Amino acid sequence: MSSPRQPALPEPRIVALGGGTGLSTLLRGLKEHTPFITAIVAVTDTGGSSGRLRSELGILPPGDIRDCLIALAETEPVMKQLFQYRFPSGSSLAGHCFGNLFLATMCKVTNNLETAIAATSRVLAVKGQVLPATLTSANLLAQYEDGIIARGETKIASSTAPIRRLSLDPPTCRPVPAALIAIQKADLIVLGPGSLYTSVLPNVLVEGIPAALAASPAIKAYVVNVMTQPGETDGYTASDHVRAVIDYCGKGVIDWVLVNTELPSGAALARYREEGSEPTSVDRKELAVIGPRVKEASLLSHNNMVRHDPDKLAQALLSLIN
Image 1 (cartoon, helix red, strand yellow):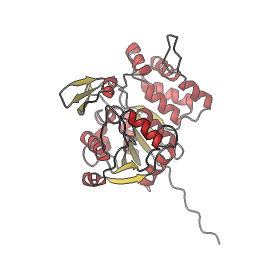
Image 2 (cartoon, one colour):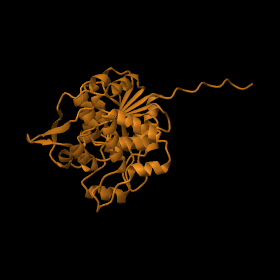
Image 3 (cartoon, one colour):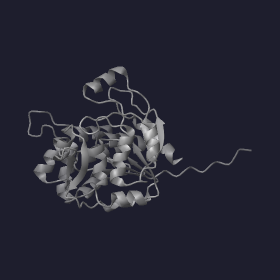
Image 4 (spheres, helix red, strand yellow):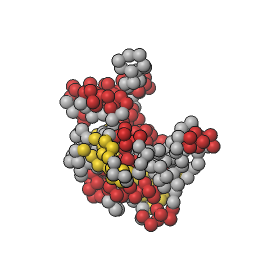
């Protein structure tokens, strides 16, 4: 007689906060395991195509949002290629991505980035939802240890001085209500991977988000970057990352720290070291003092870039729920 069939586990509700390449990498892995994904994206970018559209059209920067939409899209490959197409030099559109222009146009048509994202999500058959952290146009401010203040993500990322304090201008940025609801209902909340000061922390500078994270019953994990980032996390260890997040979110917000234990190949490591980047050191004793539990895993993608593998990252994070 066959044993009774076990009921399928419910698909988890996951919220991921960040921006840049790290967030889209995470989303590509997660979407293979659950449709209940909410990406909360920082909207403080001032560089490249996003920065130009922001200054010329007065809209929030669309680039990181575009990457997240494509990462969660279930549409035909040609549509993904279309939204990632970057116009070549020699034209007035040089440097712009078609997806950025599409989102910018939708913002003007709908008068709101949130509704523009929802409309674009339908075009791309997005699994889950993508939300801006705030609808307020704000700039990042970084005060360095020497007292100098830099304004704008691009300038902050290009500096080499240690950052003392990060803030938003204006400081009273309200969160998108749907983001707070997603945090409240989540089973797992993930911060990172991504640029610590210009992709991850801008989300928790938005009023109400740190309190929502603290109040959520979800398991909360921080993904430590594989490599240090010149100009942002030079010399940072895993515990330095965690302390920075706690400094802005408060104690008790991080339950788990996920760290990579696999070293890049010699050639890749040499290439990154030429750019001033080193593998992020996992200082286990310091992490134990801080308090969150640590999960170590082999998370590298085996290609020319030293980055997280989407599926390995998703599997490691989902294991925390179990």
